[in-house]
Length: 181
Image 1: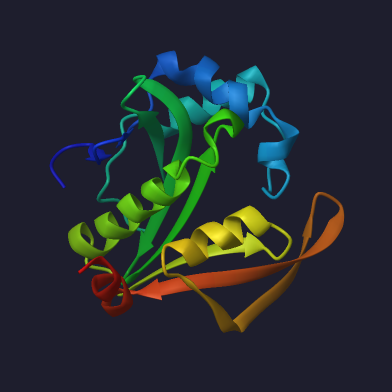
Image 2 (image 1 turned 135 degrees about the vertical axis):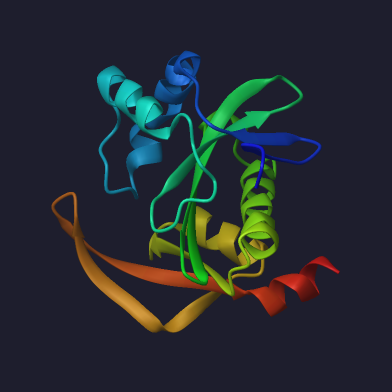
């Protein structure tokens, strides 16, 4: 992909800029955003390190997480972030949206953009998302874009001092193509 953006009418997903630190800190510092993540709420210093790690992205990297800022075009405001990791013919995705912008279809639109990017630009056969079995919002999001729960994956992991069960949701290229035509 020549440019460093993925976009729709409402959203722009782009690399991070140093000026994004305050916007990212405003939601990644919240317990509600970090609840089902392996990371704790961000400090300002962690936010700066995250931005430095995610700026100057190369959307063609293999085997590494690529972070993208989610911008709501209507307000030209950073409202979340997404990530994608492509390995061979499979990609894994994730998404965080600021609470004030949740329940507006933004996460669904961002994930759909990532799916389209993976299936069209990266030519992967399958896209997965892994979530805590208690993260109802994430499960509903993945189901809303056509992802289904994998019956062969259930992993018990220690996260933040407690055991949790993770489930994998996935969608194949052929299923995504059917749902978008």
